[in-house]
Image (cartoon, rainbow, N blue to C red; front, top):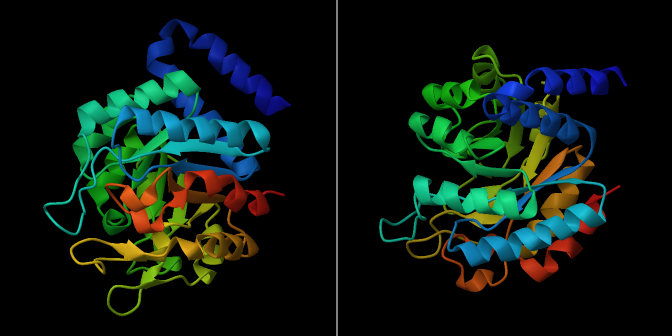
Length: 286
């Protein structure tokens, strides 16, 4: 009750400076919601077009209204780590932020996207509620610090070459830059060529740091670079990844989804079919 009163007082006093301070307060409120109940980060891997974002966001809103969970919409403006230079990367940060802003306004959804360079943090933070740090870049100090300084929630994905215990240090970089709103995300480890395996003990280990821990259920079934110049994978295992993560105490679940993943422009083999998304999510609630 006291926390709710404090939030109201803060909102009242910063009202004259709403454009400057309200996004930060919104992130604080969102972070508390993500601590209190299961959360789901959902959306297509990459921004193909505005219509795709609207179609997926409509389903995300439906799930958020139907179940007692927090939903966040996700899509990437640039897939900077594609296997091949000829692969589709996305519309870029300027156009991408316009597209996400339209989703945010039309559906009243919190949104997130990944950034790859420090300068992108401040630009993306004008729109998004959560800044996602890609797994390959989770030890990039300048990127973590830039994300932290925006005051937005920072979701740090665990690198394929790190253990859960190792993730204390990326989180510490964010916290010592002045931001305690940290989420840590498990997404598997590289074992051998073109394959990932998940050690679910990593979830337990990361939860010991006191931050919400998310399971990336779709990137964990990837076979990186294993499909002739692009990443392969098998979405069949996504529901099982999610249920195993729940057993180990995951607080949230990251799932990419698409109405026609077999023809998606990025990461199609791993994305959940949009019409099957609710079926995958339902057993994770409660």
